[in-house]
Image 1 (tube, one colour):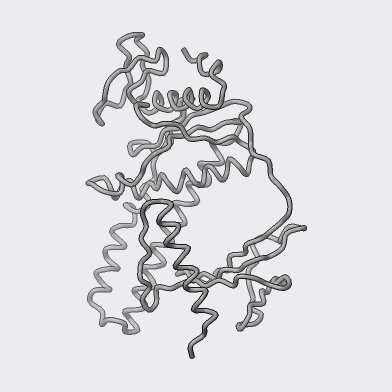
Image 2 (cartoon, helix red, strand yellow):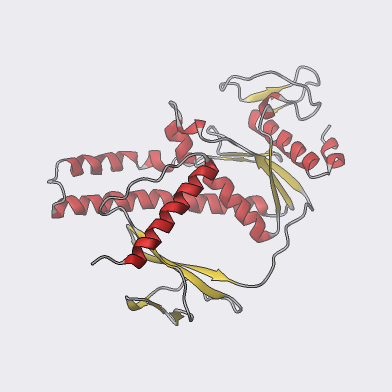
Length: 303
């Protein structure tokens, strides 16, 4: 039976997707065939739908739920989005409160970071973070499951069982990567008041022979998580111009020229400063961030 209300909600969602695409410049909305439309939203509630460990949804009724954390006092549930994942159904609660959170101002110690493939992360203080290969480590298992799926009769019971295993494996890769990003972001915020990163244009990294490794590292997702963790912990976060960070000496500011990817050590022929290439780039990022934040005197201390 045709329902005008849910048709309007679907059109609003499509309009939002087109506007989001125009803002970002990519991500054309994909047609959702049967089985791909995996979430729906309840736009408003007259009263709190969460009672104890149940959530009361219109047209569905009271459903048991595993409430991860209690709703803070003073917050009102405005919307609920129900999402279907390979591991089960999830309810995403959108809360509203009249509190105002001030912007974080530059303060305390600072660090700059540089992301890469050889090392996932290089920090201006010399710390290097190894890059876990989330997708590569499980690629053989995924290939085996996809080969099994190909040999099954389409949309049969066994076909859907293998398809569910593939979804669970993809979700496992996603969850492991996201947890690593969150842990790394919290570790970077320990003992510092400012974090600076490169304002990378990541569209080009999703093409070419290194596309699989770049997408597996998911730098864009990490920087989004890092900005959220910094805001949550009261740490100032800003992005700087990434051009030439690996071609500048952090000690004397001399332009050292382009380096090959195989060159992993920064050597300045003017002042003789030598360090890891990615660490040198992270130091330049920190200097640019301090200068942009109006703390140029601190940036000059490096030289």
